[in-house]
Each structure stands twice: as C-alpha cells, then as structure tokens.
Length: 309
Image 1 (tube, helix red, strand yellow):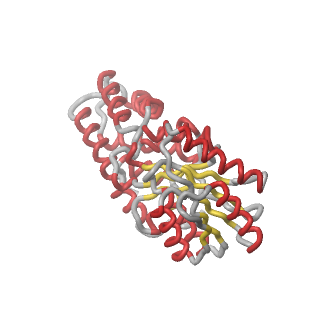
Image 2 (cartoon, rainbow, N blue to C red; image 1 turned 45 degrees about the vertical axis):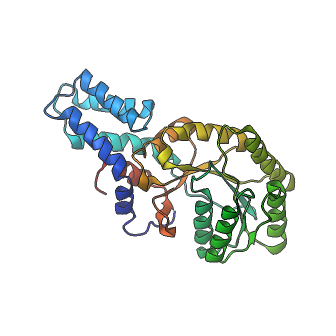
Image 3 (cartoon, rainbow, N blue to C red; image 1 turned 135 degrees about the vertical axis):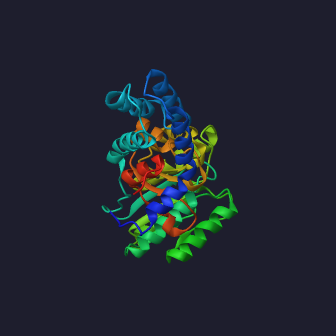
C-alpha cells in the first residue's frame, strides 16, 4: 500500500470535523452527569443513525457500551472509543487500494451520479499511476458534457497521459471500444474510462451504462477489471440507493468516497460498507491531488469519532 503523505490524518480529521462535531455534541448532551441506562443507549443509537452510520453499526456501538459500562457513568471519550472500534472493525476488511496489476491493459470504469467527483477522481488516479511508472490511457466517456471532456483532457495533460475523446453526443460505448483498441495497439497498461454522471433512477441512462459495459466485454471478455463507484460524501444515506442501482447496472467492484471535507454525514461510508461489503479504495477530502488517499479504516474511524491519531 502506498505511504500516506505526512499530515493526511490531520487533514482527514479536519475534513470530518463537521461529522465528528455533530456526533460529539450529541454524545455530550446524552451523557452529561448521567449513567448508561436503557434510555441513554436508545438516545445514543438514534444519534448515531441520524449521523448516517446506519442501524446495524449504531446497534453494535450501543451493545458494546452496554456490555462494558451499563449502569455506570460513561465519558465522552469512552463513547468515542467504542464508536471508533466498531467502525474500524466494520471497515478494516474492506480497506483495499485499487490494484491494477495483472493482464494488460487493465480496464477501470468510473461510475456515479452527477457531481460526485468521478472525473476528478479518475484524473488524480491517472497522475498517481503515471508517477508509479505505469502508462495509462484516459477515455473521456462522458460525451454529454463538454466540461467533462475538457476536464479529462486537463487531467491527461497533468498526468502526461493521452486522452481518447469525441465530439459532444458521440456514442460512449463506441468511444470505450476505441480506447481499448488504442491501448492494445500503443501498449498502454491501464485504461481509465469516465462515464456520464447519471441519476440512479434514470432508466435510459442506466441502459446506456450497461451498453458501455457490454461493448467493453465484447472487445475484452474479462474486462472491465474494475468498476469504481464514486460516491459524494455529502449525500448521506442516499449513497446506499446509489450503490444499489450502480451495482445492478454495472457490477461495481469498489468504492471511492469524495467530499468528506464538506459534510456532517461522513458516517454514510459505514452504511454502504455494511450493506454491500465493497472494497474501499480511496477517500477524498479536497480538490488537490494529495487530497485523494488510500483508504485507512483506522484513520477514518478515529477521525470520524473525533479522536487523536
């Protein structure tokens, strides 16, 4: 696993401050001068669910506290520690950086709703791969938006990687096919394919995504090797319905969660992980290249709970 840049935990903790502060205020309100009784546990469970952690994780936190501290006074720190432990245990098996070793070219398709940070994530990963000595090819598969095509082009320049693009309205599946042909011809070992952002309830757009996947498989039967769902951390529990829809349409293989620096709903990552058990590759806490880092269950759980590194 790549080393995290120095100071990333402090940036992550700062990014998750709205989430951890909201949780902390709830915990303080519940447990000030009060023993851990059934009513307090119920209030805590409600507060954790309100923070988008989901019912299952919330229940495990309260069960752990009840087992160890029932009918005793409990401190903020003890509640935060129990929260961090449960979140870390839930997410640790899913901590998995994107691995593009294997048959060349490795094909990675990025999917997600409009505005999730999908294209930016693709670009940051392209820069990272190039620095590692890989030879990526980028495909600007969101042919609906000129801005998306331009964005992929800019990231291609930053990464020093070529970009396959077409005019607005071009067939996205045909573009993906061309990208694979180019990669095979020119010796690119990774193909990163952007797709149009789409709402999970728009059937015709989901059908188009299925077509892109079918065409890739027709050209290369074992591809795509990765389908990365990029989730916006600010959407909270809606991330679950998004994941459900994209899993069905595109057989998602892993998750990146972005925009954790602007949300009080950071716990939603726990809910998605709990339900779908998808590998979590990266988390994003800002616009800079260094703000997309390999996911660490320990760091995320401690930052979410408002604990020190």
